[in-house]
Image (tube, rainbow, N blue to C red; front, side):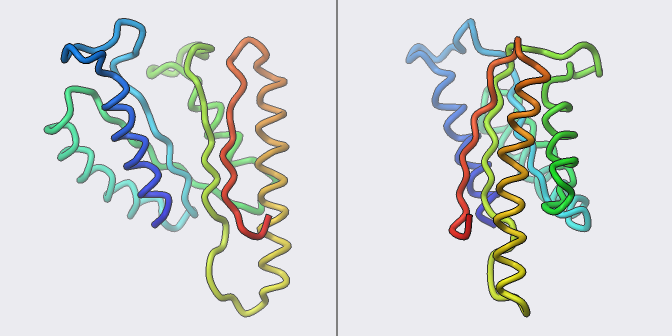
Length: 159
């Protein structure tokens, strides 16, 4: 649940950053920021339900529109599901043309964390997953040269 803590921290920081001290939003800031949480495919429904319930509470406490979107992630698919999330993050809300002004930061929190029956295989899979994340972000940057380059925060003790 480290990912949830990261998402909460980002939402809290966004709320603090939007205030210039006079109680009004900065003019250059969009009214809604989206956090996309990537989880294992079998966890998407549960995680989206969790965020739907908590975002409702957060909207009552914040003057911002809060949006947390949950998408599937397969750490061993060579970056396909991460690429889908990156592409979706730059599309307009109505599926229109990509937005080059929306900054992207990928927080790769963990792949498999904890004891497993085959720790050597798990370590190799975690390293491969981290390599795929770096490669996928670079390929995305090359396909979208007018967009701000995505940033990556990689937190993996094995990689």
